[in-house]
Amino acid sequence: MLALLLYIVFGLVFGYFATLNTAIVSVHFGTISLESVPMYLLILLSFGIGVLFTTFFYLIKLFSIQRLLNKKDKESLAYDKEIAELTKASHKLEIENMRLKTKNGEEVEDNDSL
Image 1: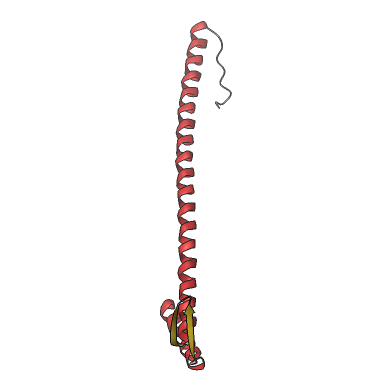
Image 2: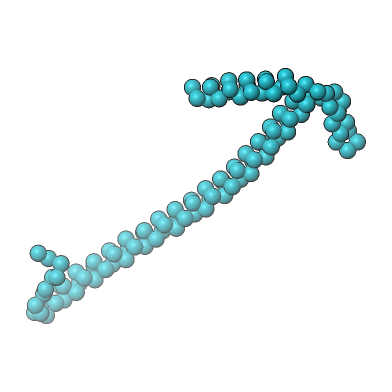
């Protein structure tokens, strides 16, 4: 609904602008020249080309940022996996330590227990 409203407003503004700028101009591209081009059409075309270039550069930046984020996510997952493996190894060593202490008859004290 909002997009439709914006299209209507843009169309009205452009229609008003086009009625004020009906002058005919000549456009020269080096050896090529276009005669009898309405000024509003020239301005609209310039605006459209600017929007296309801006969108193109924005998409390039967006894709590069997305690739960087995906790379960081993969690194984060690898680090999480490594942390999990180290935690598992640490728990195994703690269990082995407790088993050896009980086997040797040492008093086992768990500071983390209630």
